[in-house]
Image (cartoon, rainbow, N blue to C red; front, top):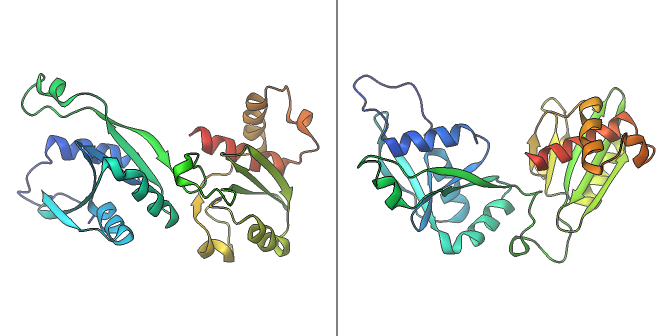
Length: 248
């Protein structure tokens, strides 16, 4: 169930649900772990997806727009285990924490909502927590950048600091991806690729080489990416897109 047009005579969203919907709207492409006391709760379609992936009970919490609200939850103390399982299924998770003591919220009135905000975005290719990583293999995040007739793949592993980029063509791309086995690949939305079903793909805007060059220069503290090596426009676009994604 997703939020839709409000039917006639449907009650307004509760303050808590209004807060949830606002936060979820900013993280549409991730499952939202919404902290409520000792649990992270998930609602609507997030709950349906997570309950199936984690094999946990799907319940409901009240109604929204005249329909029952699906809900499931995981205890905070065991959250890392559930995060790992969701990531292995290729999902992205936005972790939303309580930013104040509930007692402080109550001082503002009986209907005041505890301040909450997303403090952590967990995706398959951006893991750095040892508890979520396989010590026997790299955890690569990759970005594919087509610039004109040129194609480049950049990849990095946050846990080891590995960062590399290579030219590739349509024939050799599959073999390169099979060797790297990236946990997550950043692709332009209109890129037609047979491997989409085999990897966790995140459709994103691939930066222009000009924008990417600025990011690379700032990150490596050089006046120009040319000081980093013989980089083509496609190389620069792929590397800059990776860094921009991590910064986000």
